[in-house]
Structure formats: C-alpha cells, structure tokens
Length: 329
Image (tube, rainbow, N blue to C red; front, side):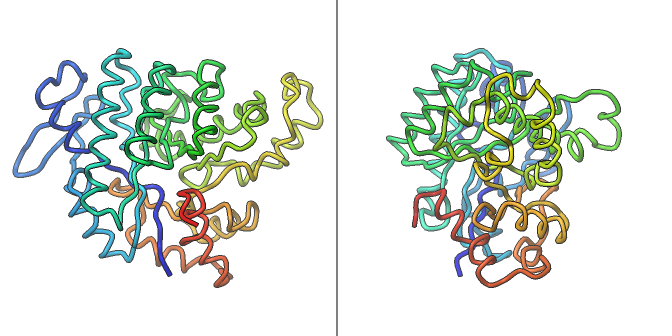
C-alpha cells in the first residue's frame, strides 16, 4: 500500500540563497556554524537540517520511515506575510520555483504545494494561477491567519474562490499564536497556540459564511484539526441557541464539519481514533510535520497504533484520501 504524507515542510535552496544575498530585504538571516546551517526565526536560531532544502535528503528520510510520497510545503518561518507586497511576491515565486525543482529531482516521490503572498490577495491569485499552470501543483498552503486577520476575512475571499475554481485544496497551517497571555512560557505558543489558531480559523470560516460561498473548496487542517473534532458539539450547540453565530446565515457547523480534511498528527493514538470516528477515514490523511521536532519519529507505527483501525480505514488514511486531494485517483 502506498503511504502519502501531506504535511511535510521544506525551505527551498532558492529562498535560502536569496536570504544569504540580502538578509535585510527578508528581515532574517541564514548562516553556517560548526558545519550546520541555521535560520534566524524571530531572533531565535533554528537549525536547518538537510531535509529542509535537499531533495535527496528528504527522500532518504522518507525511505527510513516507510513513506512513499510526500506533499512538500514551505515551513511557516518563510511565509513572509509581514514583508512588503513586492518582497512577499518575490519570495513566493522563489519558493514555488524551488519546490518545483525539488519535485523534479524526485517526481515519483514528491508533490509540490504552492506558497502565495497573502498580504496582497491580487498578487496571491496571480501567483497561484501561475504555479498551477506551470508546475501543476494541486494544493496551496496558507496561514490560518494573515498578520492578525482571519483567513475568512472578506479581504481573502477572492483567494479562496480562486483556489476553488482552480480545483486546488488549501492546506492551512498556523505560523503565529494569536492568543496572548501565558503563551510565552513552556513553548505553549506551539503546544496550545497552534491548535487554537486552527480552531479559531475553522470557526470563522464556518460562521462567516465563507464555506457556504465556496461549496466545492477543500481545506486540509494541520495537527489533527486543532480542537475542532473534540469541540464541534459546542460549535453546533452555540449555533442553535445563540443569535451571534447566525448573523451571516451560515450553515450549521454540524453540516460543515466534513468540508474539512484533517491530518492525523495528534500525538495520541486514542485521539486519532476519535478523529476518524468523528469525521470519517475519508477525511483523514497522514501528516508528519517533518523535519520540525513536533513530528512523530515513526509515523507509520503511529498510524498502526490507532485502536481498532480496520484495513479499509488504514488504506483510506495512508493513501486514498490524499490521492483524492492530489487528483491522483
């Protein structure tokens, strides 16, 4: 059975070279120390393992964990939504062409996802159309929020509609923790903040009417969908009893839940079981978050540890759902 990972990050060499040449333009730096490559992430050094930028190293890791295909997308530190629109577009083009080069090195093993400059929706649309035409990417990665604005904001609605029209699925991934207070301790901005950002994004997409406006749009959620699969009942109840969630005449969250797809990166076999029970195996894929340290060491073993996983469910999660999103069925 083919195994497919749709949550796998890269920082293409094209982007690294541009940062090295002009760190002030990108408000960050890349440097070597003791034979290793480091990336400045908000003032903190982060090691760039070869799997981030070397396609051969990426595939070697895939071989070591039994992963046949990986859909690669940029790491959140290079979203660059905070930069000017022209630099944002420049970095997106570099990232997309760099990802295409990595895919071309291993076309049977890698699939590319587009990166677009969401700070400028018009430029984002033009770049997405270019990438779909030139590189045949089937997915596009965007942040769960864009510099404090929810993805459901009217500013970005035309980007969502363009992705829908192009037949692309959107892979949403957090890049900053919007919630403040107590989050800076213990790396909670990631442990709690990232799943919370995803949950808030889903709520806004539901209650704003964005999903009703884009009935064919497919959205893949990272990190098991945050708290959505566990708290969807609260969304439904709130929609039933409160007037605030009805201001946009949005459909019930109960009906909208299966508009989303989820990776099974929950770090807990029982939680993954609940996810599958709640949304169905045909809405769940493998996600490794590789090469970041919040990914599982052995993703296939993590999949097989899910209690009561049937052969049909395993095939769906490991392969069939992802193939559907990639248009390879």
